[in-house]
Image (cartoon, rainbow, N blue to C red):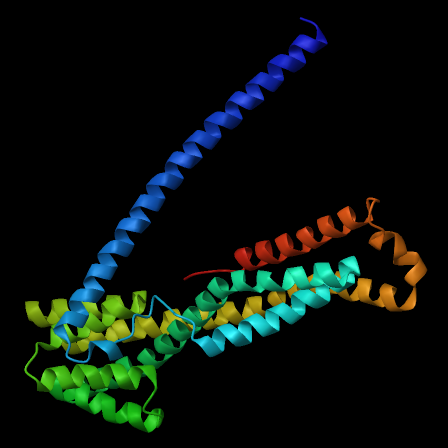
Length: 307
């Protein structure tokens, strides 16, 4: 066989392996997508059923979904739009192109909503840590389950005087439903399903199982609270460890932009070919801009650690 035939054969094998890999990957992606779609539909039906059982369904929060208000959208559009305008002007030195980049800030609404959703979940998770500890203490003192929830709400009001705190509103809803004669297991399970937080859902499963099976509720809940506390502490330690790396990644992403800004205002002749349309300059600027954006995405993806 000649070198040309060997090269063609190797290329054919590489293409075949690539297409097989893509086919397997796409099939797995389709299966994963179908599973996620099924879970989302199941969860939406569960949320609708929960709201149907509650009289004040409009006040119930679905913590897995965050809808930006008009003010949040406006602020996000202005802040991101200004940043995109500055970046566009630094990389292209053209007002028209910079203005055309501003509407791209609309595509950041989804990421901003996801960021605020995760922040809300983190706040609720930390608040539930205190609520679970208070609930465990009340049960250990010999109070009934219903009175334990009332006692936990009183303790939470001392820790969080603001009545708009998520855990205050949720425990108020649970106590109100219990006073209206509803089952405490149903009320707490509905709250856990709406949060879509593993710690709260696991606590709910343990609580309901022990209450129905007649197990040692006090001891089991105490151990569950200890496990939740340890998990939250590990999460906090991980956040502290990667916070420095996040700062370093942001600095690395900003440095090229600052370097171009410094050259633009101190050595215009040196950087002038970058803005000369009709030459490879703007293409190089575009490739550099895309590279910076991809590096930011990859760094955020790598440092997204779940426990």
